[in-house]
Length: 236
Image 1 (cartoon, rainbow, N blue to C red):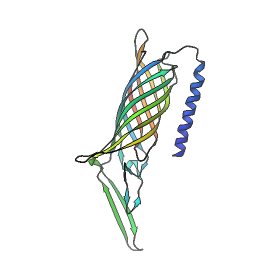
Image 2: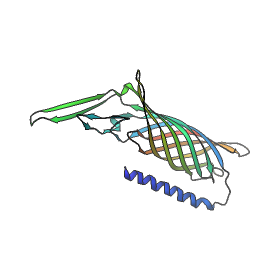
Image 3: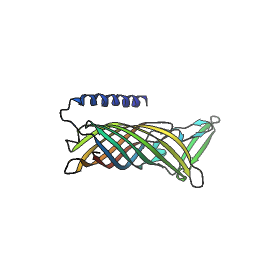
Image 4: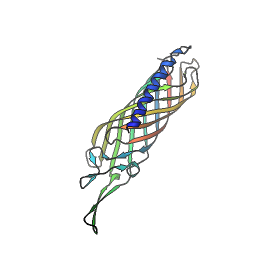
């Protein structure tokens, strides 16, 4: 995990250094505002020791569970508002909803050796399908557009995302349990212009909006997110 965090830090430094080198652009770029709406497919990854405040334990032994035994792929959607400066620097603030999709159930087993001929197997079953597990996030994204969309009809981008919000666990007939959790992501994707106003003051792009959650607090679920959205760029 430390290697992944170090990689994210190095990536941030590379983005900053790249933006500094862009100051030599000869054509002056307009500052643009941008609104986007998106949704997509989320593939879980990682190992987990519990769900919110509940740990996976049998006989005081802590269990670590692989994502394949705990979560199914799921969906998310959201929107952002931001601004593009110098043609390349995209800052965004937005909201994202993710439905954490449990497996039907989780069964854990712990074996206690009594003697060389006998052992005791203790099991614990978690009926996960009874629960609703959801994420409500405020997102801040800093992305670097490789091409200036003022002059080019397409551009790949790369950046970093910060997510902070409520992780909510509930079941029918019970009060929901909520915790504030954080996550960090590497953002990447491609914008392709599909419409432009004749006066060139605004345009729309079809965008792949993807990220990889390389770190999350506590046992917040982590994902490879693959999304698609529309971005509307305009001058105020």
